[in-house]
Length: 513
Image (cartoon, rainbow, N blue to C red; front, top):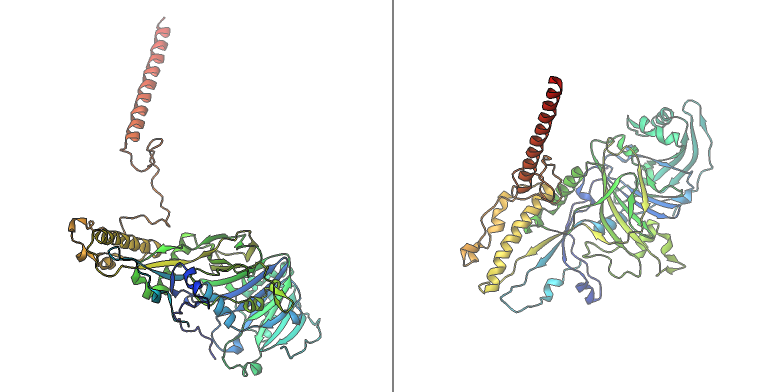
């Protein structure tokens, strides 16, 4: 059996039942860049309420299920009721809803009366049966490993272990049929020294046969602890290069950020060329990689943040996929939404999507989180704009064509800045409507967008040549202030030389006397 990624597909914007919801959106959804875009990825849902933690873990495991093994450090011995299996559709829904998105707008023809076209707005719609085994305290003298608890939960066999040393734990796991990376020992050691337990999972192959979809379903665990964190170091023990993790976080009061690494937003609300529409997955992949390198490969990126509280009517702008409903959030562990058999309509829920690309050298510590009071909505959003159609011969239309050309030039430059793409080969995009411009003198001189601009996202270091106070430019020694500076410096040197000559002259006269 092989667990593989689902085929990437474009989803259509889903409208609500009320027609006025259509007009709540500022743009129309075109494409998304979901988690399936990235290789070597994992996805985690984490819910935090006070000291209560609910963590749901999906994976991108490929291979024979009998070789699957998961080892997760946990602060306490979990009870069986603290462990359950959920369906992968929960992750699919959260990913589709929060993925970075492309939206489209339409220019109006300035030569024609304003017409609202309704058809542009209307898009196609698209129990635990096993009892927990008695707690064991089976001490293996050769391993110094204790089995604190043993459970069977759906298709998984689960152990809760404690250990005295990393080599013993690694050997115990290997000798008991768990596929553990060769470098696991050095990664396990800090967790053992912190007195953490280990949530150890492998697949029960007999129960796995009864599953129809062939996917390993996500596991969810619950526990209370004062630390709001996510262990990632174990995942790097067998890592082949960089790994991507998408974290879907739910809290009561605001955005989730990391405390031991910088948290930054992905570049957003950028106007990009229309031809990117057919390559949006590559566009966002290159944008993220460039942002990742710019932040020196050790920042955590916010890709989406939104208030999902029942009292907040607008849940996205625009929606990429179906909005998570209250049952989805309750399944994820947002227990404070429940009120008897109904929903607590006054409850506050904030959703944050974080994206971290990590390696051992750049992320030596586990992710430590905090819930901030920041309730600002944010989304990774990229805009294409369709040109006006129809006759553009009027004066306003001619001005529009010139402005359109300039706008498309800026869009090319923005694309180059965001992704590093060579946009010279897309000159046709800028020049597409030149033949419609009656006065050819209005057509700007052709420029190289990759040379003529300095992308806003990049930071450049220039030689520190002093250019004088108030000049606003430290890179032009021939400016007025630079000239004044050097003249003043020359005068000071002459005065100093004259004073020195006088002192020497007086000294010679005294010596002569």
